[in-house]
Image 1 (tube, rainbow, N blue to C red):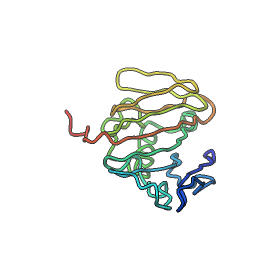
Image 2: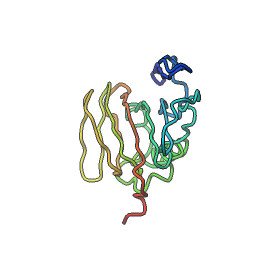
Image 3: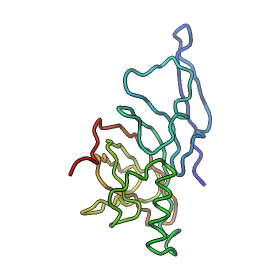
Amino acid sequence: MLKQIRRIVTENDKNGKSRVLFDGIADNVITVLTELWITEAGPHDHRTPVDMAKRSDRLEPPKDGTLFRFFEIAPESETAHLSREERQKAAHEWFAAMGGAHLQPDTSIHEAMHKSPTTDYIVLLSGRITLVLETEERYLKPFDVVVQRGTNHAWVNRGTENALLLAVLIDAGHDDHAEK
């Protein structure tokens, strides 16, 4: 079960005084992603009472936009009983459920490898996680930070408890998939 995240969103009232617009559990969940806020390209409308988190329905932010989210990665031991083909199929279905099946150009190193044309700021909040890249790996402990710049990567939890991460994804404004 995903950790429930309390989210407070502020606004200015008609007199320009600050107040709370939303205060409650963030409830837009896409597989392991708890969506907190999304921005579209261009100026941000701070007057709208719309819950922008509800507009997020996929792994990537909108073109020239941003996404703010928590995500949880379960221990790899939960799928250790599956064959490589079964893990590949499950990962493909998982990414498809997040609208991100097209983001898996090469899963030969790990079935959860993916690449998006984004700059991502990631903070590990709890648990343990390994950042798997095509040429190396980095082990993270809580409060370690990754700036992920459009690389093919996977998050692998070799620990015993879920890893909770905080992420801001920013569309990089180009399609890295077209690069050779």
